Length: 249
Image (cartoon, rainbow, N blue to C red; front, top):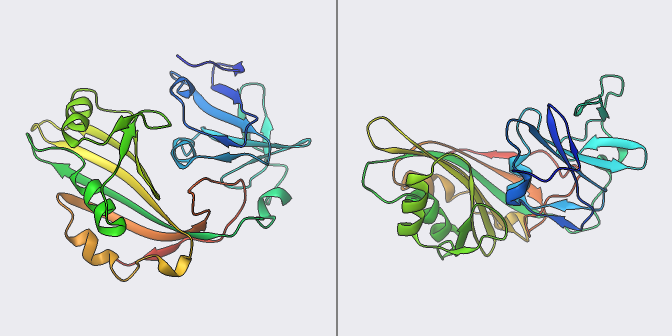
């Protein structure tokens, strides 16, 4: 169930006027696109920004009389049922291309898919990435923010193995991940994770080490990595921070 400010056949629209907007359980609508409307001064947590990357899910920034997508900068319009790209307004909104007043750091984005054999604990690859890059394991996890459960792979495995599907948040100091688990016919599980680690200095992102780190991850069948520029605290501003730089794995 969701609590919507505007509910149509296509979308659940939520108005959020706060400095930082997290991913909350009541935001997830059934059968509708999730569209979160904020002022240009708001930031999203990383899990919420990842949740808004679906086809019609959207971060709508209301800047005066202008509406634009906080993740792409494209102009938006309200068509009576949902916010969608405005074909009459090409280009990017000026607010999206404005420079951030906050120092830009580096963010390591690692997307991976792994297969976990039947009977083995989940999240092995995710926990190993955190340990290898940061020097410590995840500290918490949950289906919403803040992640309310202490990190415990046995409990994580028990809960997600029996209730697969929707992505959950895994976190530690300097790291946020969104991961989902799906059962396979042979009793194994497919894990899909996006792990993001923040660095105050972009030059300290461990680019040369990443191929070796990924090669040692258990069960990984596909992986891609890139460096992006953004806030070290991993919150997302509604503006352009530069093109991502792929890391060769």
